[in-house]
Image (cartoon, rainbow, N blue to C red; front, top):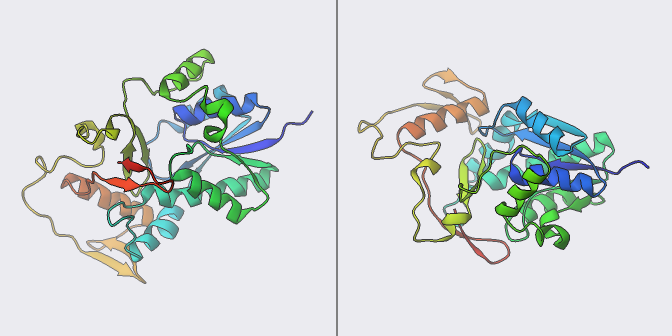
Length: 275
């Protein structure tokens, strides 16, 4: 009997690696799609191998850095888009692009379904699913974290780690890391775990993209950014592609301790979330 094909938004992390295996056990032929949005990821060959060991019939990796910055990040800067006046929307901006690529792959591969690893408590479920249905109203959406058979049996990291160990799924996550993270060229964000306690200060190692302002240079640094039709194209006379320009400015800002935010936001479902 032919299996139905499903395209999963795959990061190579604990949650989605477990989902690859679990979805395959449900009878799907899983196509794991991993997009390079500028995040620091392990070796791509390792992600390919991990996805296959988890049970994916196919693992696809696509670099979308330039498209992400040109078509999503730059427009958000034009609009001065901030959620509740503070949040920079890096995670939010990436979800429609990931969804778009999933729908494209589903069309090419003849898949009947797409899947994501977002929970039923956060905003990502809405970002993914509204994007899916806007692009293909007839697509089937599989969201394991909203399926009782899955989330009741595997409610947290401890259970997911046990699942991965049981089925030989190679993951780097550990019980000692008390938070989750999401990264792309726009920013890196952390949430859950210890951060749910507002009395707990973020750990220094969380600030991967910037050094402490206490350790940053005392002297200021002046730069000149050139714009063309509203988009930055050069820094100090040196031209860059959109992704390379943002990468350069991220590194420069990080050296000066710029870009740290600790906030509490309202989720779509009404809950409060710190990140």
